[in-house]
Amino acid sequence: MRTRWIVYILAAVIAGALGGTLLAPQPADAVSKEIIQLQQQVSQLLQGQQDLRSAIDRDNGAIKTLIQQSLDSSNQLNKAMGSLQQTVQSVQANSGSRIDTLANQVQGVSDNLQDIQARFGKLSQQLTDMQGVLQSLDAKISSAVPTPGGTVAPTSTSPGINQPVASGPPISSELLYANALRDFTGGKYDLARQEFGDYLKNFSASDLASNAQFYLGEIDYIQGNFQDAIGSYDKVMVNYPKSYKLAAARLKKAQAELELGEKASATRDFREVVRRFPGTDEARRAQAKLKELGATSTKPSPR
Image 1 (cartoon, one colour):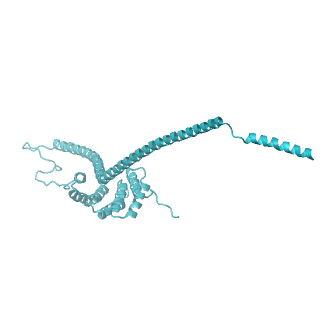
Image 2: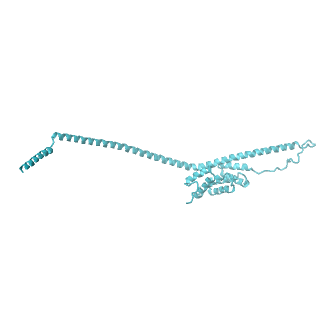
């Protein structure tokens, strides 16, 4: 029993010695080195944090500068685009009427050239006929019988000196049309209106009658009489179904309707120009007008 207690006491002493050894404080120099190392690491971490913050501040400043420059450039670009848009709108507004006037003048010059070519052909034929008449007169004069007094008696078919000569029309159809077209292209619209009207009264069955009717509509359109212009364009399409002015008449009728605020009728006629006269200048102009109106070239199918 005593021996057991002795063993217990020795074990307790050994355990206490070991625990004291383990729990005893370390030497002062070891603790100081660890503290110094820890302080150095903390200092390095603080310095790294400071460097990182400085780098971030520099990057933020550069980014802010770039953003401001981009905003300034965007504002300048927006101002430039606004100014350009105003300029384009002004040019379109100012050039719209000029383009229509120029198109009328070009069309008038083209018709004038065609008319000149036709007149040259007719003049050539008239010269040939006159040469034949002169040759016939020369033959008749040379075959006249001399009288006893030495004078030449005219044949029975030769016109007498005092006989009245039949007078022709006061002006030919070609000359009247040429004068009217010249006054139209020269801006003398009232005079051209009278001349085209006279042409239709006297030469309504001629090849250029549809042109004369079309230009009456053009004069009304230029002078702002859009309802009268529509009536003239309708006469071209109804009375002269084979006229080469059909596309132009339909197009100008649609433009006159648009001037009167009749958007639905104008859209319908623009589409009719595109449908009936594909590939022509009138069809291209009609498509451009439909685009301005926000309409398609063909009538949308009902749903």
